[in-house]
Length: 212
Image 1 (cartoon, helix red, strand yellow):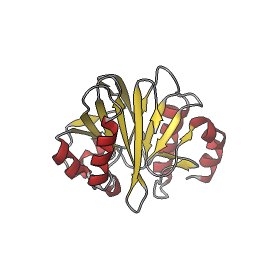
Image 2: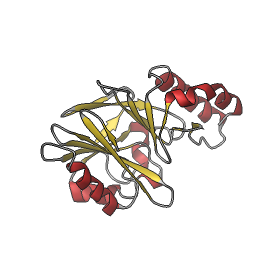
Image 3: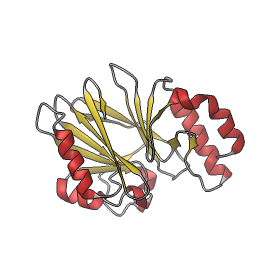
């Protein structure tokens, strides 16, 4: 858990694929955003209950954001929507591949304003056409990036050994993440452990030369 001044970030790992589910809760208002309802709806609902304890006001799930359309990131989406009534969001170009209706199509640079925090959608094209990362700029500390399957410790996401898809993802990751955010920015990937941009930056040329 990341206990920030204005916001609490909780996460759980679900499924045999170690999918990360993230919950952001505004401490003052109780506004919540869930990132990737990947699997195990019961565990996600418990996560929401735990997150409610982080708020001074009654917690309310404002939005469920899907970072990309791959099946392992949406298996609990329908049930969590049914149980909570929350609105949904995803990158515009991935929406046709998501069975659950998407209420808010996300384009690069869109900013969602919630009661107590905001999130910027950053398109990272390559793992899927509509993959998005979400950026929270903490006014009191490092920024936090929720990168789905587009950036991990050790490299960018899988692009199917397609040079064009790799070039697209690598370029977006460099120009839209590494060139815009400081080294202490925390990266929360779709699977596995967090990292920072500073920890990964020295290896960018290696990623470029190896092509994955």
